[in-house]
View 1 (cartoon, rainbow, N blue to C red):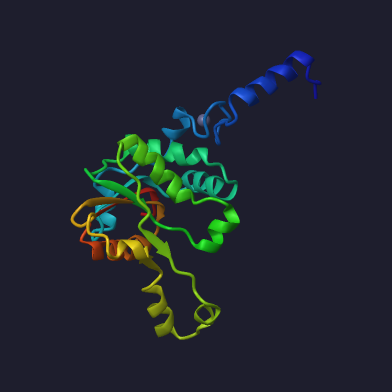
View 2: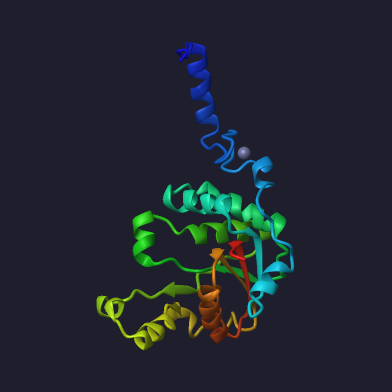
Length: 219
Ligand SMILES: [Zn+2]
């Protein structure tokens, strides 16, 4: 291997300082996902999400495959917040977003959030709120399972627990100003739709009109 000349070393360092990120797929500097590579995503048609998840008002950027999986994985487990902004840009440009009053997000598991040090879904939602010039409001929390609950072997018990995975933040249960507003609920991936359904169920207790937007869906 040819050793780097001092000039090349300085050049490499300068690029690293000026462009702290490079494309996940082609290493183009300045972005975590360049425009060229983003065009290779398996984009959804506008009607695709409603066909696969008919009981949800849902839009998605792309289908779940090894590329979208790699993006989500890198974002979540390597902790690169810049993906939050990039995914929000993709939602803004490629998903047919409905008209809404504010944005919220599917809350993470508190233990996983603590381990990761950030809430990746909230980052997407907050960046999308900025692009849409709408407020971001935290509305939900994910309930932690007690050891006894987690260890239960009864299917009935497990299903009962699953029904209460999410709940409205206590201050929102008496919140009247949100009633009849339209909310966009953001998540990274939609697999079976059960998480979105559970969150929508909670949000509807506030008489909200609920729409969902995700980065990728399994179809
Ligand atoms: Zn690229």
